[in-house]
Amino acid sequence: MIDFNFETDFELINLSELQKWIAEIIISEGCELGDILYVFCDDEFLHKLNVEFLNHDTLTDILSFDSRVGKQINGEIYISVERVADNAKDFKTDFEDELHRVMIHGILHFCGFKDKGTDDEILMRKKEDEALQKLPVL
Image (cartoon, rainbow, N blue to C red):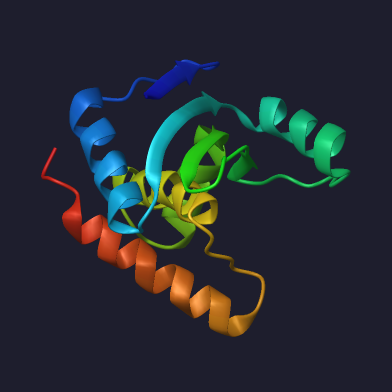
């Protein structure tokens, strides 16, 4: 099950289409859908989590807490809508496109992809692009 929670004044549209897309990506990576919770929040909310759980005193666009069991994908993904908006401006892209990229980025981490080294980063971007191409027009 994929669920969405909003800790800030923000709404997603086409929730069922997004759920289907995310589930499709999970399955295409050879994994099974478990319980995924997305929490959309502001910078302050996510910063507190970043300090408390990772001891990182920085702003970030996403934090993911992986609790998979074998191939079953379970976890929580926290996304700062403010960071996504700023990143969209910096990268000269549409807010929705950047949001979808960040949403699937967390899922790809759960599926085992990393982004700490150059090669891992390149593969992660490739996987994000492939997933975004499967996203239906919303």
